[in-house]
Length: 69
Image (tube, rainbow, N blue to C red):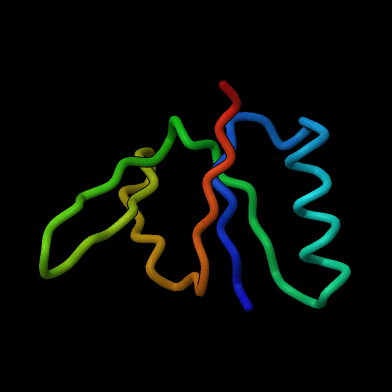
């Protein structure tokens, strides 16, 4: 499974643990800075895009957002 983990800092303990757990189970996971993304939420075609490249993130099987309070 391809997983996109939206997080502010890939060095945070909880983010690192999520990455380690996903990789231990054989999943491919990428940490993407949540501030570099924006969501276009529509009823017919919701999308998540990376701001700098304007690239769609539709090729992931799962999106997980890890935002600290």
